[in-house]
Length: 379
Image (cartoon, rainbow, N blue to C red; front, side, top):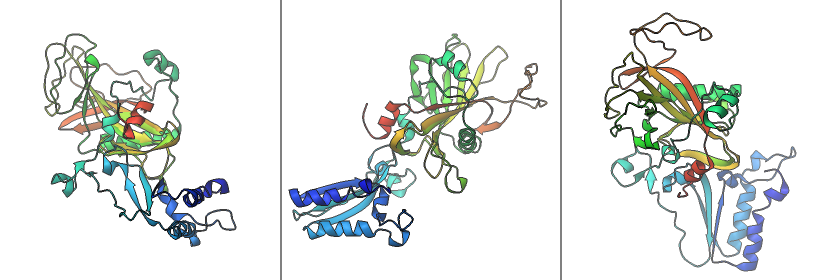
């Protein structure tokens, strides 16, 4: 910050320490607090004096008889499904040692997790309510209101659409092992992608959907225009008060009659010509601010949640099973006659040996409840 009233707030700690003399002082701040320095002649932080003011501030506490230590910690390493990296400073004068807390969670692929020494990170997928509709990015605000009874901003900005496209490319089209969730409209249940799907009735309302999610950030472009998408198998990035995380999803829905029960790892059932449909939902989360990747996989922790509004959302790519080869046509023209052999596809995706074509993309913002969960608060 450049405002003196904000830049000097940390000195209040020294002032009240002189008056109250507490045994222990604990302070949390952004990691850049370590770089606190004087302003240059241009009114901006003087990079040549980086950390000078912070060093003077620490010395002031030590002169009062305190031992001072600080370290940077990530919330995801201690059981919260968000990355949220922060600087923690401890000052004490009671003679007891300052102990840095040992991580309890880690990267699922790390040796510590594989050996059972640490638990795997909690993921962004845990905090998402999969029963909430994810409206098409191609629908108008009026159509979304009519279908779902919710307000939504459409059309989306060009930069937002670019971020959606990057996330779909990374976590749907190019993904080697998409994150899958079985989303059941029947009873509103959400099941693991590796559990059997419930029996499908003759009702055309019965659905099973596979969700392949990722997150996209709306914080603006990253350095060098880098993609900031993330998967849902990792913690969410920092959540601000401005919700800038969007969830992107692509669904696989099965609509047919009769009993049907099979694990998601099994091949998709045969397509018929009687109206039965299979559609895939591949999802990721979109973060609408900050630097780095704008989209993230559903298996990653959520990015840090900060102040400033709702900047998190879900994006979904809707796909259908694809067979054969057909002649191309303009998307502005009516669809050619459907036959029992050829199928229409725009972009094809291979998921566990099955080929699908993207037919729609949905996106919605994360709800306050989902952001609440991302920060480690219980329901």
